[in-house]
Every structure is written in C-alpha cells, then in structure tokens.
Image (tube, helix red, strand yellow):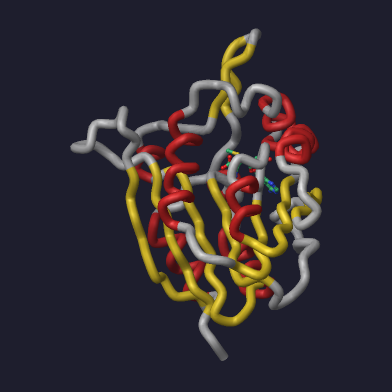
Length: 210
Ligand SMILES: C[S@@+](CC[C@H](N)C(=O)[O-])C[C@H]1O[C@@H](n2cnc3c(N)ncnc32)[C@H](O)[C@@H]1O
C-alpha cells in the first residue's frame, strides 16, 4: 500500500489508537514552542494534532498534507479563520509563498520522504530570513532496531513505507540549505526504558539572516 493510501486508511483511528510516539511528539511540541509568530507553515499536519497548538501561537497557520483522509479529520478538529489546510505532496514544489513564514514545523513525516535535501531546499525558500524550523521525527536508533510506522486494523497490520535518515543526514541537508542547528534533543516517553534508545529526535533549525 502507498504512504498516501495508508494514511487515508488510518485517518479515522489515528487520534484514538494507542500511540505513545504520537503522544510524546505532542508533548515535545508543547515543551519546545512558545511565544508568538506572525505566520506558521506546518508540513504533514495529519489529523491536526499539532495544528491546534500552532493555531494558538500564530496569527496565521497554513498546514499541508497529501492524505485526504487525514486532512478531513484536521479540518473538523481545527476550525478557525486564521488556519488553512491545503493538499500538497511535500516531494514536489510546495504551494506556499516565498520568504513568508517565521516558524515552520514538521513532525513524524520525514521518515516517509526519501530526499531530505529537497525538503530543506523548499523550507529555505518558504521561510523568512531568521525564521525557525522545528523538526521532530522518530529517532533513527529506533529504525536501526526495526521500528516502523504501522497501524492495526480489522484485517491485520499495515506497515507504512519508510526511509532511513541518520542524524547527520538531517543536519547536512539543513546546513547545505542555509540553516543552522540551534537545538538538538533526544526524547523518551515515560513508558520507555531511559537506558535504551530514544524514541524521538528534535531539531530546532534557524535560517541565517542575509
Ligand atoms: C505519522 S503522521 C504525522 C501527522 C502529524 N504531523 C502528527 O504529528 O500527528 C505522517 C503524516 O505525513 C503525511 N505525509 C507523508 N508523506 C507525505 C508527503 N510526501 N506529502 C505530504 N504529506 C505527507 C501523511 O499523510 C501523514 O498525515
């Protein structure tokens, strides 16, 4: 099954399935983000779990995803005149303005995208100089041990296609496109063994001023 079809199928249960990776990601967002932003772009918004938080921080929020099922859930969850949801495949040119956003956020998405350089090139095009780009993803150490996005349904388990990105792949793609790494954190859920591999890695990148 394709990535897009997988998320269409998962969309109705995504918010209610037990999923401590999703829950930890939301907690990370609450911990890392604060202050006010004029304009926020969210990449791969899914059901709008984080869009609802971003809507409290931004004067405007544009949220992109390529799953119609996930977008349907998100539009039901976040109904506000300053938030818009758009269909977009992040592996092709994004339908977003240039040098327009002072915050961009991308959570649990990039494991599904092979070409990180394309993502950071598009991000560099859309972000304002000095803007921040928060990326929070499944830690590659989980992938080394076989973890993969998946969901259960009546007919069994669907594994969603993923690509492996090492930590250095993220930082290389970011720096090659004019970002600096301001913060890098590794995260464990309360149910995780803190002596074992982290569940998530987050990066706060900043686009250099000209
Ligand atoms: C695990 S969900 C995460 C959703 C949300 N960011 C969250 O943290 O709950 C991954 C999302 O990425 C989206 N996605 C994956 N590849 C994509 C692509 N190439 N273009 C747009 N969206 C994509 C999926 O449709 C799905 O909604």
